[in-house]
Length: 437
Image 1 (cartoon, rainbow, N blue to C red):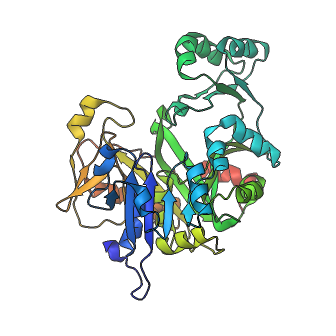
Image 2: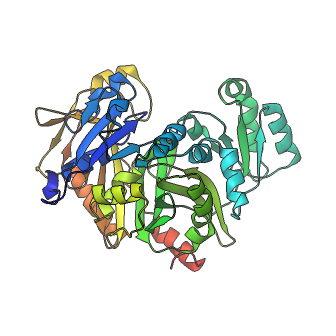
Image 3: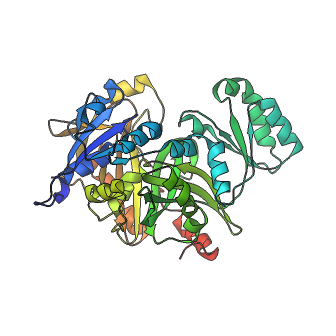
């Protein structure tokens, strides 16, 4: 067992089957295995089987193990119909519903549902034609955010453009010069009114009937470089803490209880918001485990992972035992992350990851494998590890995470050094606006 974790001697191991489109949840599976439970992992692509090799067992067909499993875990959107079908068969399933899939994958639908339950949404307009959008901006000058919408890949959604010009001239120019190429890639897109404030995420686990408390308050860092410079990435790190239901939760996510229960959703759900002195404006849903969010959450949850996941799947009501203070999670990567580059991938593929001291506290799996007890990079992404730290203060959590990164020998590793630094100003604003209690 890793890091002193083990299952209770008299407790029967729980059998977990993980089903994954893109091999995302290996760290969660590894955590459960280290508690003494049984884990099997299905990768959609046979080429992905090297991901987590040596850490968890891979299987060829998940259907062959659905009756073996006590709990079936879908780690991404797109499985809603399958998940609900398994629930009707009496299986214990953590994962999406058809409704929750649509909440995340269709921005327009997500905004409509937010408005329907009484959230204060920002004005937005959906387009299929770029000339019409350009004409709209000229007739309605102001700051807007451009967002690809509809059925687009998650990485394509990161092409969003946040206008800085108060009359919208910069976005008009961007659309004018990119309309020919973007019209082939993004058939549908949204212009959303820009509002300034603090970007904050509010999330909670949902047991199919109700939310599980405490809730998770998080601050994501999406840009590649410190000070939010450079391209958007899937994620470079997050600051978070656990809280009793606060005004932001009550104004947003709490309002989703009834539709989530009606759809049989079981899992984690998060709403990314902008908060300012006027209101809290929800932007978009994440209706699944977040990555690296779930790894950072595991650093802050004291309840045994396998136990609370089983309770969640059963629809039981319980409280998570969580640490006081803060958690910081930092993505440690190598080239070609966040891009696809075959040449760079071949250079870094199979590269060893060495730990100066044999202490794996706060070390979470990225795209890695275990070969003869040695850690190596797997695949082509360069997404190596997530390193976490906890502390009563943000400074303590940051210091712990950075000390753990210093224990890693990995050629040309890079990471953001400023995760959590905005807390001093963000917390002052949120406190003065009455959102933190």
